[in-house]
Image (cartoon, rainbow, N blue to C red; front, side):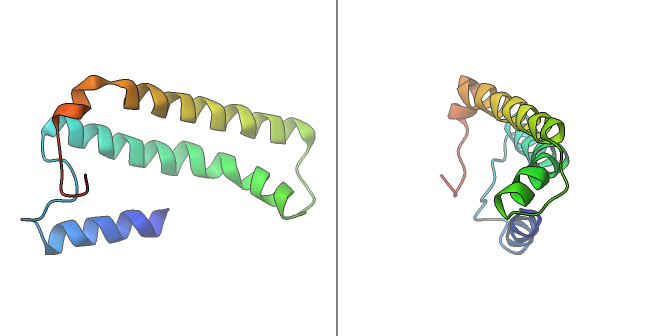
Length: 95
């Protein structure tokens, strides 16, 4: 995920006339917020579940449940943002 964001920033800097991201200020702010929420909230919450899937011992049932709840909260937040019609008026090359 971090590498994907770095690649996107690099492409935006190299080719600004073919914008991959939205250029309208509010929409770009929302995109950046989603990036940060993904990195700060979603990614760390996924680690215990990934460990469980891979069979790595160590996390308690309580920790796994907390991770599931955190992931559900972040995904619910993302769904609310996607339901916001104001973003549909903006477009970028990636659309």
